[in-house]
Length: 62
Image 1 (cartoon, rainbow, N blue to C red):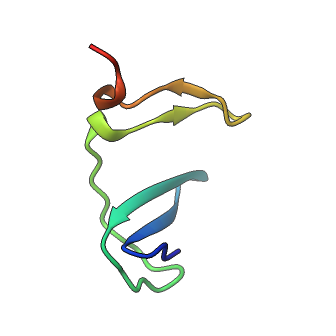
Image 2: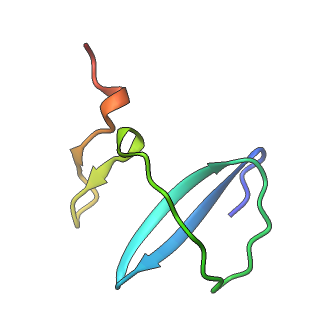
């Protein structure tokens, strides 16, 4: 999903849906298998209703 200078990547991992924001424009084939590496400092966690459970650690106020 291209959004100007960034790309949203929708992933399925063992039946769980993940959405990632990737800098740059990437022309990815639907259904392609991709290696994915996560920086835990940039991960937000939401519950099944879409409510924020845990913000990314970089977003926390000191």
